[in-house]
Length: 95
Image 1 (cartoon, rainbow, N blue to C red):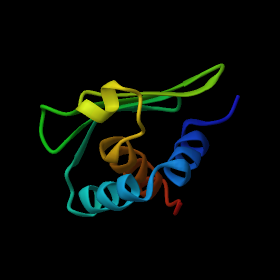
Image 2 (image 1 turned 120 degrees about the horizontal axis):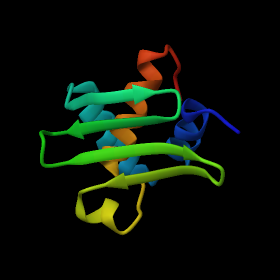
Image 3 (image 1 turned 180 degrees about the vertical axis):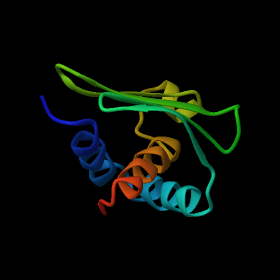
Image 4 (image 1 turned 60 degrees about the vertical axis):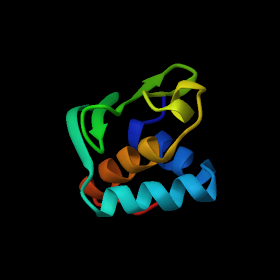
């Protein structure tokens, strides 16, 4: 099974240009608060407690959820990108 970091990095690469750009802006501005981080999952709030992001490793790959409108329809949105970038940067990886 691949690691959370590897799978998150792949999703950032596959995200839309708009999501990558906006997510990068959110991450650089410090708008991501990581609430829980384990080798298999991360839970964060982005831009305040109204937007919750969850990333988790499953047997099928990476599962994600975001409480924003885009995230609720299964898009790897700007909030998911910002969360993934925060984790990657904390671990010294650059996507």
